[in-house]
Image 1 (cartoon, rainbow, N blue to C red):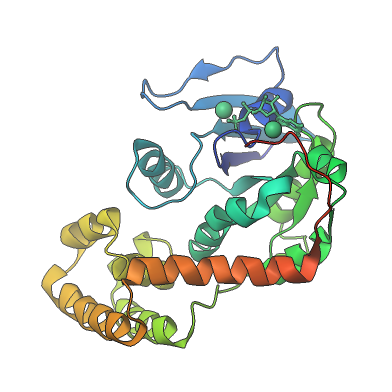
Image 2 (image 1 turned 90 degrees about the vertical axis):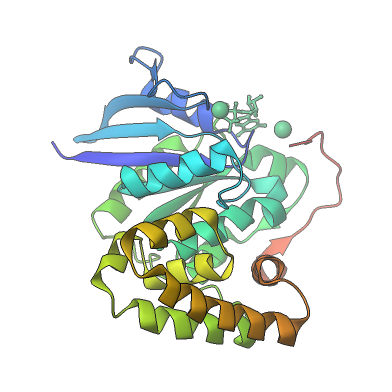
Length: 281
Ligand code: GDP
Ligand code: MG
Ligand code: K
């Protein structure tokens, strides 16, 4: 049987471990992973003729390389190259949870979104047109309640479909960061494309974004793999132009554009309810 490698990625307290426990089953062996200080687990199970190898990764709000958890998740995605990322999001807190999603989209990875705590969204009286939202971002979205197991079979059926290249929703999109930033991304990306070593780092577009952010892991990668001075000079020129034009530092500007993209997408797909919930996550 074929093995599908899966990584659960999401904010702290979004329900990753609940999902992991339901999927891998109480009877499976679940050991601590790699003797690391961050909280990560690995499990195995079989479903519909496939072997699943699933990692429960530490919770993160973003993939900037600042905290041990963020660095751990980034390295896992780069080194273990999971077949499918399951991005677990809190259905009742999408404005914040989808930020990480926009970063995963930048990385150009195969992905399914578990719209978890769907019960809380419904309890709040909110309605999300998740099919339309999934179509907009090119990622299948499956509602789940990982506390009870509701929706988990549907989630794994969707994972199999994406793995087999049979899900019509899947499409790689680019988050539009606005013309000022996008022209900087394009200038750097077009240069990066000429260097075959860059292919090791996901996509040239992703690395170009990370360079503009002066991301620490990307800096280390460039130092190791390529002629750093040439890239730094090109990057610095673009950063200066962007910051002069926008009047803010480029890292915040990129984050703001991502939040703008999310709020635009939610404006079209989410009808918020007016009931308060006990959700504090
Ligand atoms: P993690 O930090 O992402 O691993 O999240 P956990 O799996 O530890 O879950 C955090 C809390 O949310 C726990 O108290 C879970 O019981 C609860 N939880 C998980 N999934 C759901 C869900 O779908 N609905 C509701 N209402 N609570 C959930
Ligand atoms: Mg957990
Ligand atoms: K909660």
